[in-house]
Amino acid sequence: DAIDFAQAHADIDAEQVYVVGFSGGGMMSLIMAGRHADRFAGAVSWVPIYNLVEWAADQPRARYVADISASCGGNPLGGGDAWLQCTHRSPSTHLNGARTAGIPVFIGHGSTDGIVYPDHSVRAFNQLADPEDRLTPAQSDAIGRRTLPAELRGQIGTTTYFRGGDPTPVFARQSGPVRLVLFSGGHAGVFNPGLEWMVNLRAAAPPSQVVRDAVSRLYVAYFDREPDTAGLGYWTRVYAHGRSLSSISSHFAVSPEFVGRYGDVDDEGFVRLVYANVLGRDPDGGGLAYWTGVLESGRSRGSLMVGFSQSAEFRALTGTT
Image 1 (cartoon, rainbow, N blue to C red):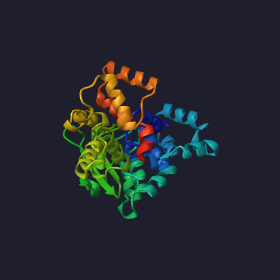
Image 2: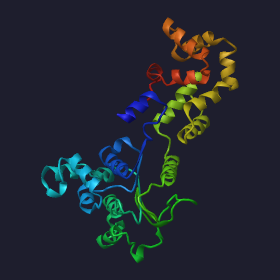
Image 3: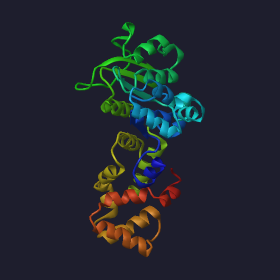
Image 4: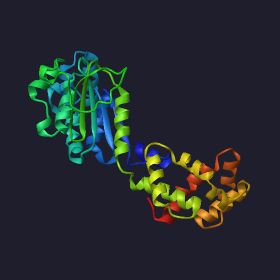
């Protein structure tokens, strides 16, 4: 629902949505990756709970056990419906969906975490990883006791994206699209590495059809022509790397080609031209008054062009998504 709302109300690429969480939120990001892998381009999970029943069994803080019992309808350690509820609400139940879909997942955990023991992240990694890349049960148990086995110490087998000022990674491994980083520290999220990981994933991916169509519509709306290959390639990369359509539109709005096409007209005249050139029709009275008022209130002509070029009417006219 949140993704649908954002897509309906903001300039987003729905094919490049990521989910990020910390602690209980880290648990939820893994659940989302497993249950809705088709909606996310990747998931980042810091110090996540992998299995609520096992977390309750290991939990030294009575208030957390009480919270789990209240959420699941009873103490899950007693079995029955409470055990079933807590199991259903755990990433361990759903991560096979993420593995099957091949969704990229970044998991990070403090090696001395005393709230959620770091073997939770190890077992989440193992469920997602190829068999030959999994940590052994003995290694997982030692990590759960907050002791990194000697054979794993300093084994950094993949890019961690940790930088100066971040905690020190003590172990990192990648298996296909899933990455595990254990770092020196406790129950903490180190958010910049996860964000940089997302940026690099996005940069490596070819622009989606959604992005290509959005930029193509801007070209047609502004210049009444399809984009040339070089222009489309450049602006789709710019858009895919985080520049907004409004920003790109503002650049188009001062181009000689656009100025020559629209000339020096007042706001109402500009709106009339946009209706004619973009939608191929005269404006209705309400639309003319609304968009003229929008411009007179200080909104730029570039942002207005985004509104028209990305409208449902223009999508239908151009047969784009």
